Length: 315
Image (cartoon, rainbow, N blue to C red):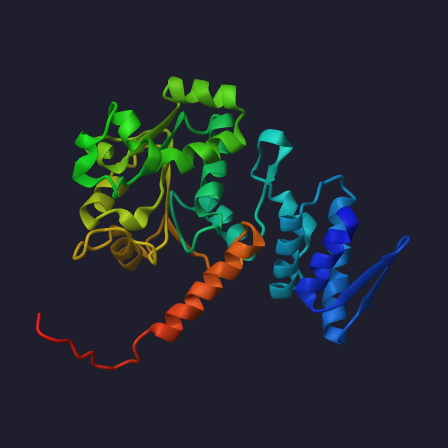
């Protein structure tokens, strides 16, 4: 569990503000009482998890530290028991934060689930895992992955290749998640047979999707009209996930986001779940959460004071 050259122990120390050392089978902690108690609790949970044969990575350790700091009563084995899917390379996909756990449970209780928050929080990845698991259990007959191709706009016709080649760059992240969960050959067969379909949002108009798990990714870039169109595509025995980050909109100036409208008017509707992630839920490389916080701090510093008036010269 200590990791190469004690890297895991060093991560625990960094995250708790303690000094962690090991001699033989004995780990020593030094620091403030509250910090050492937290470090000891984290180490007990990590050792319990590693004792089951689970391979721990630095990201696992970093996330465990953050989880137990926020939720001291959390038990890593219980979180791991909520594994949704075991993907390629025997990688278990399970919730790593309380909000991720709430997100996965929302899919069991609702037919449409909105996942909102910054990059790296697992919004789309976990939704994909739920969809793939449902497909493998034959709870749905297909998965439909949808994204607005906002950056291409009306210029698609000027790009080389057929329509699939034109929009592929905007849909690539969805393929990446699929290939992380299903081996490449099987994933290719699913795509070729249309069991897994990846399409631009505009192509959903006029369709009714039955027995499907549908994911609308980057939904902040859907217009209000597109969002209504997408949500009304839901057919019998289908579920949908809508994921996006309202701070990362690429819509043209003056065009309102359908995600902002939908979260405002649909919150509280029975059968629709709303889960809001924060940077505390980021589970990518530990630096990602630091980068998000740094940008947030910079935005707060440079924002104009409330009520301030900007003086502009002649237009």
